[in-house]
Image (tube, rainbow, N blue to C red):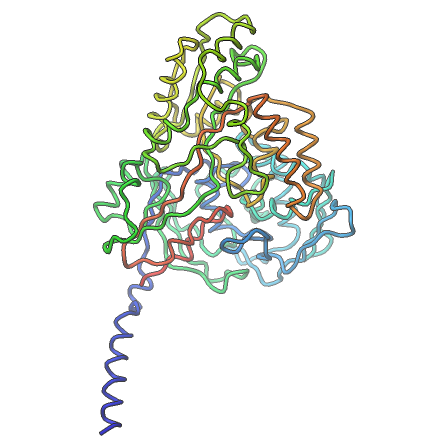
Length: 514
């Protein structure tokens, strides 16, 4: 009798367990993911933005990558990497010898050398070449050994190798001095790009020949791109999507309930920041530092976060966000409250004609960009000291305009390339920065280089505190807010909490049917 009862219990448990496992049909069913992030280019040498890099981290490999929540890179296409000697100027990687491109050709050190060199040679206006400012040259010593020769000591170089800028391409498929312009991708990531329709969708199939850090590939994915948050939300509510991320409307985010039984809601801290960048070049109405300081006295970021974003972002008072080594509140220290009186005094000293008129650009259909621009215009003009001409631009045009210095001010988000304060240094406030504000301060440049000499990144904190103090004084940008990360998915999709964790890797392969 006991045997019969035991068998019956095991049968019931077996049935219950079987019901919790997805069928083979479900395993092969495509998971649809929606986002408002746009892809600038399918070529790693031509894009330095969150939407493009999210795709790159799935279809390309880098020598190193980041584990979920990790701060130190681990080998991916490489078997091992490390600095040679003690000067932090020679970095060498040994490649895996079992990686093949979709063409069937084996990846070698020559492909790695070619990939890094073309990023610097092409030096695209909105590309990632600035990330390799300390890279002097690359040599392929043999089929599986590549050596990077740096112009100055850079303990952060391994972190940069692990970013989208370090994507390894097939040298036979990508031109050496120009961007690839078709819709094909030849990489060795966990996915292949089966098809791509610009601004519409990217269809990703698991790459059966993938070899690297991951133990296997994920489910088939269809990434769908939406022009604004309202469209993204509508598609998710209409059950056209299994996962929605970056970015639902603030009014929707503020009402999300993690205990909702009908969907999975993941809210997490993020190192993504959003700044108002100012054109400091001669000829710009914002060239005089006193004009920029006057603006800093007038911006009310608490009101911006509470009204436009309905509390789904946190006010930010410095270049480096909370949670990252070296964070301070330098803008709160220098501009603790809104003061029209102090702003007027600075403008009077500058001898400028009032109101100061300048252009303000934003990316159309990029989250709440239009509403944010309207609120900042309102705050600055309420003083009677400024007149703001607001204009929205399509995303690619917007990038080209700020790169060419064609706007006086523009607001844009910055997603950390890697979990280190250095990603907020040279890229944002160093001479020749990605944000192209025209700002140049020799002391800041020196502090950035000095900070890169510490393998123990905690020792760089003092340098970054000084950088933030100088930035608050010079005001090439005004920090606005720091994002919270939200991902929602249907109840039968798991793994969405691993999609984006501030390491710069977008882990589509972690999505699974439950």
